[in-house]
View 1: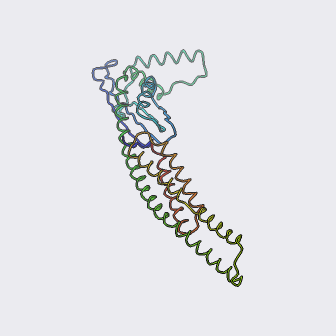
View 2: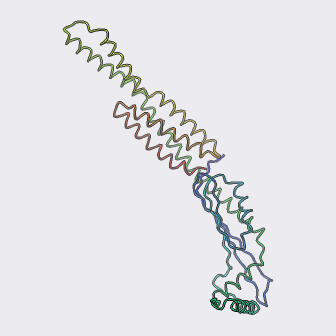
View 3: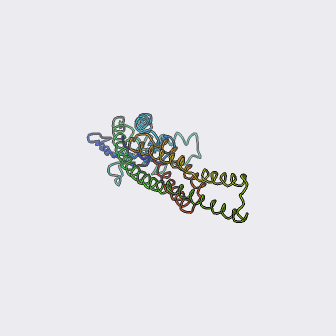
Length: 305
């Protein structure tokens, strides 16, 4: 399965022809339905709809369609209805104007201080009266399916890009881990040499006399403690294991975002421990470089479904 990003955008258009439909001798203008879907990252699936009043009844069907194919993300669905020729105003029918005038007189009789209807109010109400007769029950789901398919394609393309970036960071982290592995034995050997030098200095101060067993045991204990303290073999092993699991998930695809997010946290933990055990500048540099790469991965993993 592919890796999907939670970020994407898609839109679709649908035009309706109203030829033959007339109101008081005037043809009802053809209308165009536009629908767009925007998606950004989120911990869960969060759907929101901005639909005109005519399409409010379609929200449950749209919600069911989206939840069947999307698992995570903050998704916004917008729909708009407009005349094909939005620059041409249609003459409102006399019957509707008479009806509006009658309704206004009725309201004024009860509410004398009510504001009168403006020309814009009359045009809008007449336009709504025309549009209420259209049936969008078949067009809206089909249009939403088209837009959703385009959105999934966009999210798949973005997910492919994110997966490639993450795999590249994995390669760099493995290279850094390989640099760190041989450093530990060298550091232990360097420290052993220092203890030997101190031992010789102590022997010289005693004029060749044999040092007490307690002093020798103390020196051996300090050397052992140092070796244990700077040993990062366990951290490197766990880091390699996490890297292998991340690579496996990216190749598997599907809903892997939450698991990747957890593994990134574990990577960061191991890099921190490696830095805290650092006994050399080069090992500290490797730890810092690892943290930079892991942080870059964390930012991108937040966008994976």
